[in-house]
Image 1 (cartoon, helix red, strand yellow):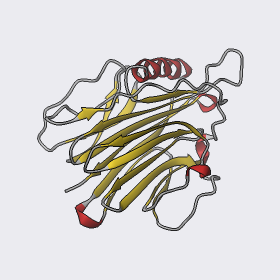
Image 2 (spheres, one colour):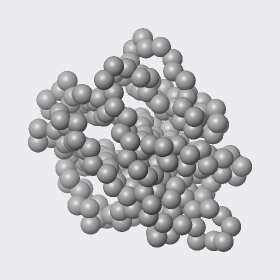
Image 3 (cartoon, one colour):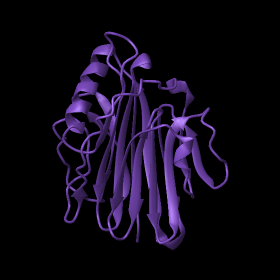
Length: 234
């Protein structure tokens, strides 16, 4: 499986990332206007209920402070303010998903190998030991890493600022998709009128592959952070 560029998300007028096998046929967007991988034999869309916790205010960092990092180790949960979590066990590998106030943490494990993906603020005090990748979240970027045992990691992410109408439409579609599948967290708004931020993690599992799509909204900046990552075993 290889990483292919980007396609336009019709409903949100944004750019969505997607993975597709070489030579695979095109696919249609799901109802929420979110680009997904084409269906093949064996994938499992993880369906867990959306988080109902609404107690955390939308204390998002400024988008200019965001970073995307990968570690070859576990990061202690106490380093983050966790809003919603879920676990996945596919037999050949396992993963823990977490939505945080700044973004997300995904910890993937197989046969003693650990990869932890983090989207957070640059001011977040995280260790430097076994940090494998680190990029500021600005514009579009993709990266990949080959690990021991033939394990590979690919990711692409984007920060997009949109018009206010587009932003609120995107949030509505995000909520509609998140109530049907994936891990959704709605943050309370700090004001009376403006809705709070949202984070959604959507996962598709296959026997050798974990695909994680994340979306984080930042109302104060009218910004959307989107990412898609592929954890693949030989």
